Image (tube, rainbow, N blue to C red; front, side, top):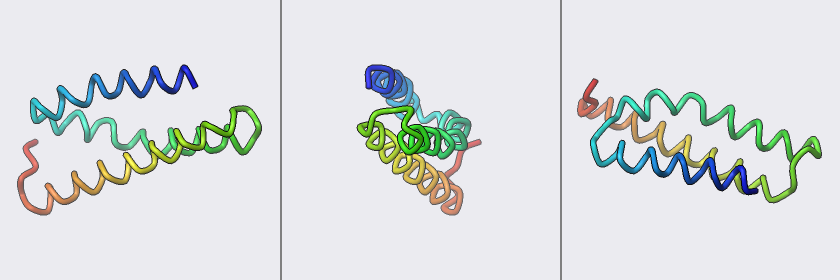
Length: 83
């Protein structure tokens, strides 16, 4: 859980300034890696290599991936996607 918490904190530190600076490219670069991360965490729990609490990490990562992807898609459709 410590490793997961540290990674989450680091991503938060990166994401907040990126969002405040309107750096959509950052989110486009990171979004494709989030679903595999969710899968790896879930598989680690299912395979008995990680404690059950890591399911929460997988769920949060999966939700975050869906929300980020949806926001990027909405912006692209609205024509507000600055490339």
